[in-house]
Length: 130
Image 1 (tube, rainbow, N blue to C red):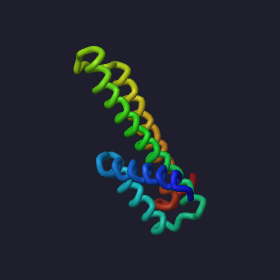
Image 2: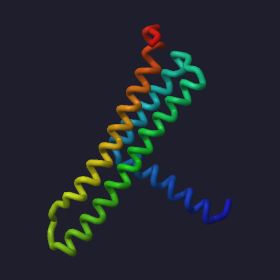
Image 3: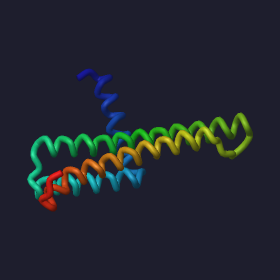
Image 4: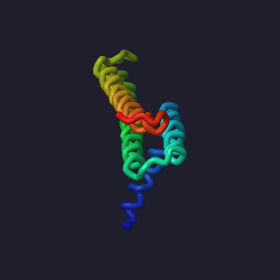
């Protein structure tokens, strides 16, 4: 790899470390993901079932990371721009909307993950077939 590629990879790793260190919800998602993935061994999931769970978990983690990035960017702009341009510690409706929509994206991803988990685990736990 070229040095430039390695530097970019380093930034990505630093971003993941920072998000994991500072974001409580990301830690919660990771713990739940680890438990769910461990349970796939207990219930002998097929490779396809495991892959669906991994993709679903990935969806939630990506949504959480994107939400963290949105919140950081909005906070940066609001702290600097609002204070300087408007001489206010005020509150921006657009900033609130951006943060709320980002959080909503995480919620949608988490709901999808729960539905997928139910669909995959229910037959394994209770022996029922849909």
